[in-house]
Length: 216
Image (tube, rainbow, N blue to C red; front, top):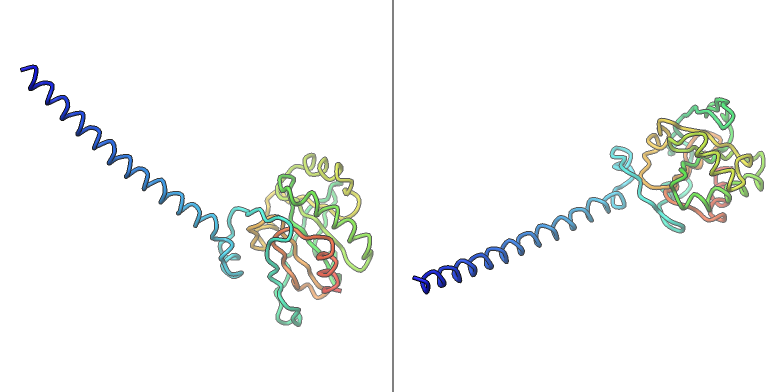
């Protein structure tokens, strides 16, 4: 009796080990497939064309210096360029600033946020560009759905709060209107109100200068 019981116990342990091993292989396969699907999903924005991006705006992808896309391409006539989206937001002092205030003027409109690490370098570069180009162009930075206190404290620390125009967009509507999916994003608008360049990702000062010259 004891011998038979011992044999049965050994057999059950063997079956149990095989079952556990089989389950381990299955779960390992599931985890690998899950990681592959996640990678494909997260990488998808980089493979979208511009039209698909506009229709399927998703969570922002962080794109660092020298990265990103410029959807403006070669300079075209204004007839072939898309209209810049309109906007109307309050500045740090509570004054309403609208795109209609700048009709007939070249504009650089940047979408930024405190949590965007690449904005820390880019915002001061915009301040330099605004000083260099003066009245030839107006640079506007629109904060994405953050409080006045949060945005103002950040730009004060950078020393740029009074260097160019900062606006607050509590509903994050501007970012969506340009089909944003990366951070930061910037549009360069000519005097006809057309988007000549749409930069997805941060820029060095020289690139900012080049793109501003294209809209003058």
